Image (cartoon, rainbow, N blue to C red; front, top):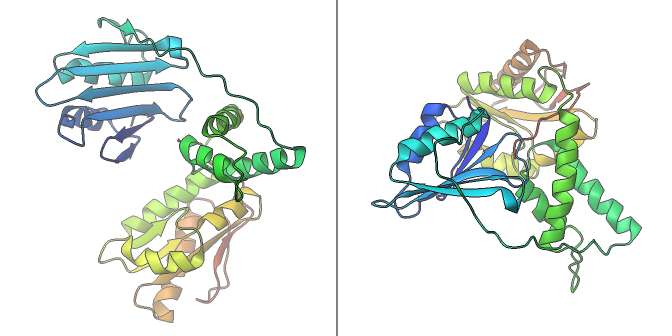
Amino acid sequence: MLEIVVKTENGERHVRVSAEELAGLVRRVGDEGDRFLVVQRIPDLPDVFAQVWHKTGGDYTLEHRDGAATRHFQVTTDGPEAVIAAMAGWAHQDAGWDAGLDWSPLDMGPAREVPPLDLDEGEGEELERRVREVLAGGYASRAELAEIAEYYLVTEGRRPVSPEQAEALVDRMWLERVEEQSSWQGETDPERLTRAFESLREAGITAREHFTCCRTCGESEIGAEGEPDARGFVYFHTQCTDSAAAGHGLTLLYGGFDGSRETTTAIGHEVVAALEATGLPTEWDGTPDRAITLTPLNWRRRLVG
């Protein structure tokens, strides 16, 4: 799989696609509402992307940007194959991936100056603390984090953080986290959790990570998430993620779709078995009224974006 995220005009988001899947997505573009796609690396890096635009019957416009407005280039081709080859090479970070195409620099104009944040010390610390919490959780994109930063301190009649300031703050903190995670070795606990959830889905249990904002919403929405023949569910919500990222372990909520205590208990045992098969420690007394807790847990979830 390619370490990329592909986002399409029609709102689809494809994470870690194969070269064949990327080629299919490029060949697909052209119809109304599906005329471009953007490719970002994993982890996403500010101002690093490739994208293509195509309208059925016309040429393909391919662009790539390498970290700054002065490193933004464009080329036009008459078919998708050159685009596919270039995008695959870009995704693989192959040397000379851009050779053979007549690239032209794009003039994006002067970079906008972003004024420093005008916050008192307490507000600045509070804002960075919240962004860092969500960063540590590992599920948010840069765009989602920037929205959090922009609105976190908003009060009636006061918006102290502009969109540009929020983006600059998040980009700085995002790159710090990317640098930090570069030293992580091997499979992390969140990756073990994802592996366990994948095995549970294959066994007919709806398993969702970072699902909804709270237990009330989770319980009301989880039924619509799985396959029609799913026997039960397991999930954790965003507050559970915050707790895990803060070092307090992770709470998993589970149950059977038939509502019986027997099925809920059986699902609980399957969840514990899947988690322990990946090496994750669990705490559960075996009764359907108690949540399953993963502790101790070293929450190091690698960023995607």
